[in-house]
Image (cartoon, rainbow, N blue to C red; front, top):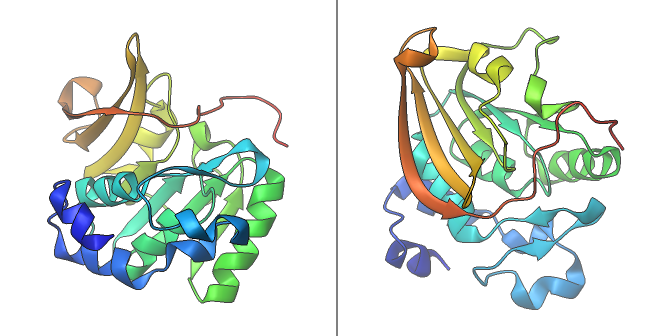
Length: 206
């Protein structure tokens, strides 16, 4: 799998090492083990998916994470992305809105020894009520209709957010560097089309 990631343009050795050291099959249903190392999304609980390995690797690479950085993840999902970031030395804070998935994944990450602080909540709001920020990095693992203002407020100046954003043609992966408090000061880079489950805003959590 790692060699296939290199072919797809992943060249961050820290990312590649983490992808090699964290078994993806830990995070999927045993019935799908045959497909665990193929570059494809797979269904998990609560009508969600675990992303393609290449997508996890690309988002991780775009974050440019250094050990000790505080990373806020929006969309805990299976826990695979959070585990990769932990393996890279990040301090990970992760928000999930689906209670069934939250309960399952929080227990799994703890069982596997990954120290991720997991929270049940609205990803559009980040962790406004919990004083762990500001964050060095924010990663969004679901497709947003707009850049969430609350998340940008929780990002450090000089920090990076990686987020798939909906547009008329689907979703595009953005890397946003916060170079000031005003939107005009944000540096936005674009990295092509991706497909994620939608990011839900203000709806009742399940």
